Length: 51
Image (cartoon, rainbow, N blue to C red; front, side, top):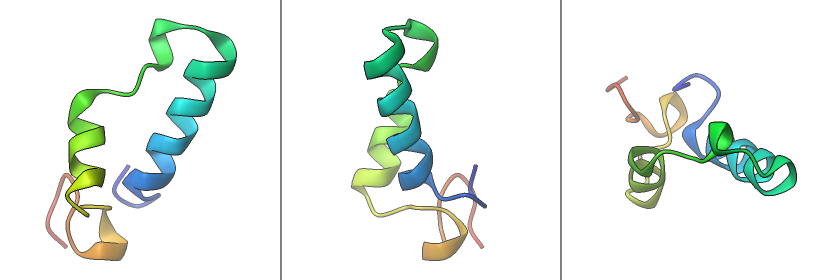
């Protein structure tokens, strides 16, 4: 997920959750927190991993 970008991953999950109304697509809180902290993955140097 760090390679795609956590902000992109969050946007996709939010869209799928909203449109499909399925709990399977509810974005995890850790993903929201990382994006809020600016930890977007490889493009920002930090995400779930440090690059």
